[in-house]
Length: 572
Image 1 (cartoon, rainbow, N blue to C red):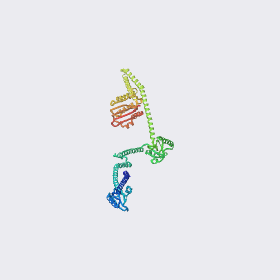
Image 2: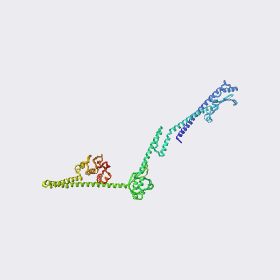
Image 3: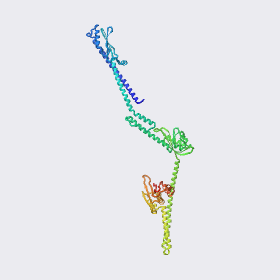
Image 4: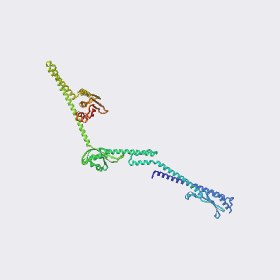
């Protein structure tokens, strides 16, 4: 039953009740008014006839007076709504008033007359010569009342018909948005969550439309979020499994199938004994019980059985699955991660860290040996060469013209000794830069660049130093120095460059350790970084030195594009 029909039916029922009540009131009113009218008319007629007929002057009490009275009544006719009849002494009808000409031929229905017509007794006037009977006749008044009720009823029926028609049409136009709302709801039912309702003139439907649009948007967002979550679960690299309250698995993602070697059909419906070794069941059950009691996530590192009985090291998180918005327990969620690669990576990282420490120690020992050799060369060989040079000079000075040959030999000894002295000092600078011990890192780098300029005058070398470089320990200082030295050597030997730029910068972090960056670039022919870095000992040694302190070395180069070496060291 539609809303329009229900509203019209309700209005009709209200109208029927209103008509019935109004009709009852009107009928009751008419009944009382007709009763009062007929009663008053009857009394007036009775008093009039009584005063006239009993007057001896008007009608003497003789047998001839009956004819005169009959003529008088005939001249009077009907007395209001009463029928008047004259009987002689023998009860023979002498005169009867004529029927009413008002609405002659028509009468109200009997049932209506029975309801409305008053029950007034007739009046008898006794005469010496006969009797007058006055009979009240309310038929004309009842007919008037019936006609008035008919007109009123037709008016009421017309009014309610027009009211129902107006309400029906108004409801039809007002409820027109329901079709759009139902259509949008049907589209949503079939999965079209993008369906939206327009604005409506009526505030009620407009509120419904806005609420529907918000609900559709929320549902669309929730569905998209669920799809994303489902996609995340399906594509997760971690194995995800769900166990119901009966202790059986009800879901697993592809990662779980890949990890355990079982298909989804083989896992769903099975218990944990399928994948948990017998010796690990007690630990598993203890952690599982504690997680369910405390409603907290529990972590466990254990081993699981794969298909075929092979064991795999895993890290597992077990969390209770609760009803959203409630505390009802639905099951458990297991997130399992294969720890085999992680443990191998941790072992590799530990080995790498040990290698770094060993490399750092090796370089430290190497620098110590270089320092010791440089000291021995300076203290022993340098002094010996100086002594030879002094002796040769003395011999050359003592030899005269007669000993010209001895003089030339002594001068040759002095020249060779001077050359050996210069070579020894060059070797000493290569083994251990004295500027690094006495002046600091900045001056040591400036010294090696100056030496490089002297040795290679065809190259244009630019040096830029930024920040306080003289604040770090000896190990880091020698590492930075060797990086600059190695880069300059490579640029001179292999790059075929005409310009080399050396830039050393200290980056001071806020609340973090300083970082020192060495950037050496040239405009040479470039190189193949993969071949150069893997085959050249200089690059490998430089990378090992920097990585020993947790730094990184990157090489940017290309054919005819020059080479740029960037070394970054944490200086904390």
